[in-house]
Image 1 (cartoon, one colour):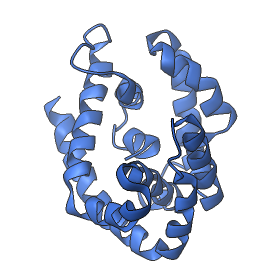
Image 2 (tube, one colour; image 1 turned 90 degrees about the horizontal axis):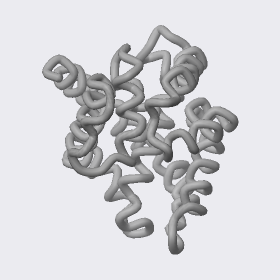
Image 3 (cartoon, helix red, strand yellow; image 1 turned 180 degrees about the vertical axis):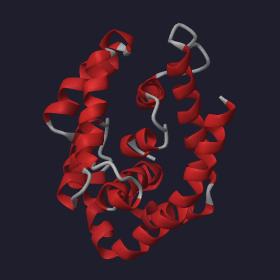
Length: 194
């Protein structure tokens, strides 16, 4: 799961969302300096990643990409799945995607001092380019993949995976839809135990 799915799966707690959003840049168990709800968001993020990476439907999606993108396949599918969530947002929320993203951007601003330095540096770009809304289109996904390629050392070529997205669009969408029902249930149960 990429940014949008992690935020959606965090429920209504803004600090859970912030912890979930920052979690990839926080390593190990040394995160007790954060507020408790941010810590819970970090834990939730890791639980979502563990569940996702081991899930047979997610692995089926990555297999379609593995011969061309190798260990980047999981990252690409995370982004593809965010596309399908953004595209079909009204199936999952009564709250328009634009309102959801604007509230999250405002929450990042309101809690700026609680963010990691890396996240603080990312926030202006996230908001200026409206990354979360851009996931709705294939062109937006392609732009995200190009930016990720530019940040990677070596040649990941993830930008070209939009070809597979177009070719296997209905297969990826069906896999996402089936998988997402399960991750919603799993995440909601995890939130109750945090």
